[in-house]
Image (cartoon, rainbow, N blue to C red; front, side, top):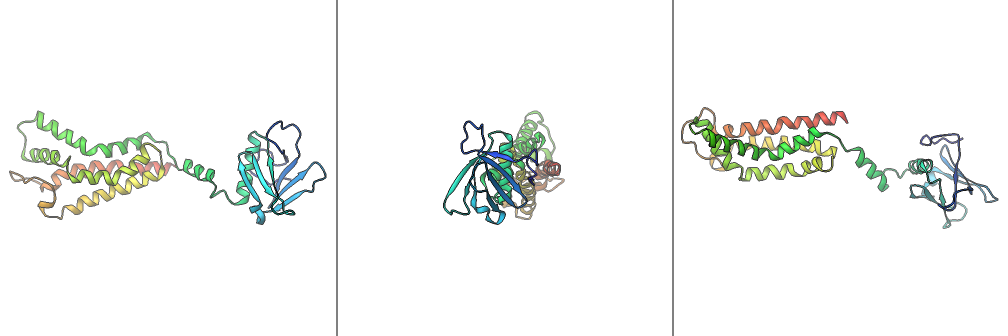
Length: 258
């Protein structure tokens, strides 16, 4: 009786052939019996039994065939073709797991990569928003400057500060930190990009907070012409910090759903 949990019918032995063409008459049948791979032939050829400890004798050729080195004749390899339908593929996957190579075989790596993908338009919009944020703020200040001619000192300083910062090293740091995980989210749907984007957003906020302790000459900000109700640095960066960090919490929500 087969013990393979991956096959559709555990009580049916799987036929094997010596060719992938004209699979009308099987040469024998294959079954996984606990920790033993059993290859039973229709003719006088002796049955091949391979223990799991000897799994190195089995090579996965493709989705419907395996190659077995005879335990009695080292160096002699026999290629067995399984039914070229879904049942054959199920058996090959079961044998791959039985051999213990499922974690290193290329298809397994692709399978894990597929399982670490996510489907969330909201996460992609959040990543796109974070990348565009410096220029969204720049556009906002440009509109303020265009349509509000008589503005308070704070608005005027915010306007001037962000128009300068949009082309400053601060924006360059923004993209260096966020660009790689954002690409992983936008184009490859990688779940690791969600956590990385959250961590990088938090790091960027911490950098901004840390820079507030530097002298004014290192903050790339203009000197205010009139007294301000808030420190000029935070007047400019509070909108940036809030609008950058809040959307990043949505990445954690998406990760919780996976």
